[in-house]
Image (cartoon, rainbow, N blue to C red; front, side, top):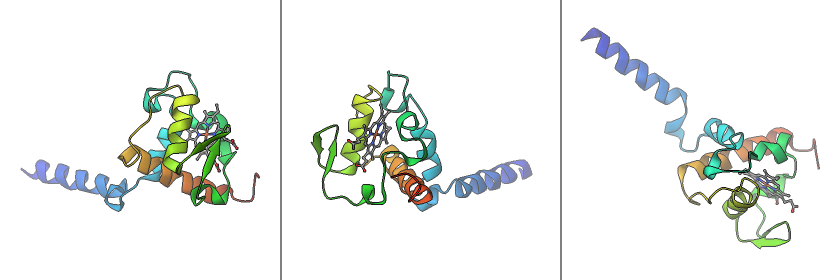
Amino acid sequence: MKITTILLAAGALMLSATGSALGADAQHGKSLFESPALGGGTSGKSCLTCHENGRGFSPNTLSRKTYRVMDNPVANLAGVVNFCIEVALRGEAIPENGEEMNDLLAYLSVLIKNNSGKNQ
Ligand code: HEC
């Protein structure tokens, strides 16, 4: 009985510590960013392979009205991420409003903030 209570309390602590109560989880986004398995990728590459230290990103990456990737017009940021997943990771697009996308975008914003001015 007591052990159950302690386990429950520990579980609740862990949940709040991961920030899942705050919505998007940038820490989880970071691990997705570094994973070649994102979207079932088959090229062995991860986002990190090409975008280490935020390479290719700029402060207006998150707010641009239109995007072009490798000369292709893309409607929005989630579309760009899926473009990179399909073309660079050779995986399948992930849902644009899903948890993985939200977490990835949350991490992108942290990454860009931490590196702004360092590499354009
Ligand atoms: C093989 C290299 C490669 C990989 C791997 C890759 N990208 Fe890209 N990414 C690019 C290139 C090239 C561009 C376009 C740069 C350009 O055309 O100016 C780009 C553009 C972007 C942009 C738009 C930046 C801007 O300011 O317009 C975002 C966001 C982005 N990638 C996110 C990701 C994410 C998230 C992943 C992992 C799922 C990823 N990329 C994996 C090469 C890559």
